[in-house]
Length: 297
Image 1 (cartoon, one colour):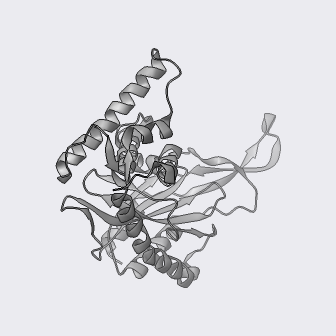
Image 2 (cartoon, one colour):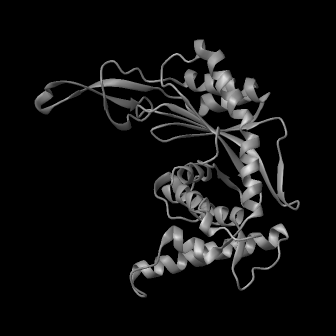
Image 3 (cartoon, rainbow, N blue to C red):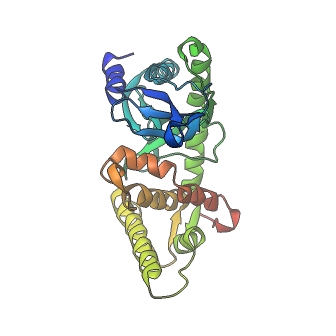
């Protein structure tokens, strides 16, 4: 494991998450505990925990990165973000570029790790980075692209199991690329797809109608721009695009243009994580899997 990679993770998560008892009115003792960051005392998680809960540590996160390196034959880069848990995007060093259309529309593997403090299992997902639009995304409906890792402290002694899980994730890259190629080979009416995803505003005027109009124009413009830059033909009056283009248009809008608050607004990796967890992106994928939207290529 590169010392630089380890230092990147350690420096990004250079604090602990500690458990403290919670008090009621007038200092009344309770059986509940809260989680707090050591560097800024901010609460962590979505609620209280019991006295049996043991928060995971940065060393546990490092164990996940090291298991990923072992499975993928090396890690070239890692991006980190904390939001009620540790998020990482891990870039394997081995070249896994997959050309989807021409020379400008390619995808590269991204291992997306989530280690939260909400009681759910940690997760590691085989996602992708699309260089044409700088989208980082995943496909929730592709078999084998997500593994659950039991939330427990002291992951390092379980390294063999972690490596086995990440090996399975590595093997899912073919499943993911096969799905992307299938989406590129199938066409969909872009206007019909957007109606299926977002519906129609209740009226032709008002704030809702304006938001709907602006969003539709932004997504359409993404498609037009990406068609030019990828060397695809101009969009015709039939509004036919590949399912791959349609998915990335919505996902790209959510990642790069949707309104966000706080530090997410200016942090590109935080915006990518927010898009991964955005239900509209998952719903767009679900809509594209409906056969009635598919048209012959």
